[in-house]
Image (cartoon, rainbow over all chains, first blue to last red; front, side):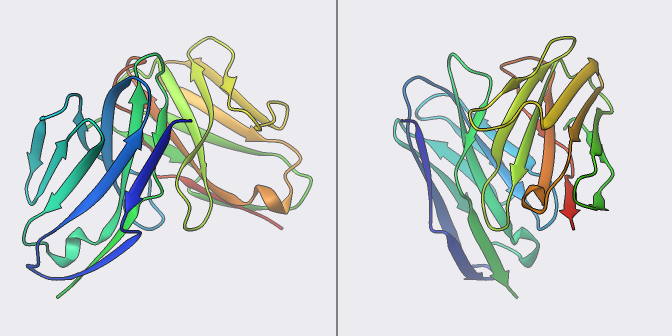
Length: 110
Length: 115
């Protein structure tokens, strides 16, 4: 069975304290891995898509990386406005649907 | 990124009534739209996939006669919750893509409370 596991479930950081969120997956035939940010009461906001092991993408303080088993979302010098739930999702080669992990709730304190 | 809207943003209804939620792609043609449900502190669970002009494909365990999906145009999909019950109370989110393998862009969600 295809699975997506995110860790930690929750993370509290001080402003400026860099860290990483993990998304591990066990799927047969990965087409792409997606990262989204979700604020409370809102829909997910697209951040990145990664397609192959070794690929990296960056956006402001965020950098996403991908291996054959997992993806990391690195947050460098976070700010309070980075507080949100970060979701990863996988898309298979033969399917257009996304399977989401449960997310990591990030809180950045000033 | 592409913009998707939903209406209404929240709705309260009585048990037994039906509720319609609209999902619109504002600046792209959504050939495929998806409907998700999200319970508190849970992740998104896919309910169904719809392609414009075709019948929706429902995920296992989702009642197609209860959750009616219509994708009549490339910019509009609707989800109707028929004979709603309190257990249908949830956060319903749609997404759209311009192609089956493309990035999904999500709407802001609709909070449904059934009394």
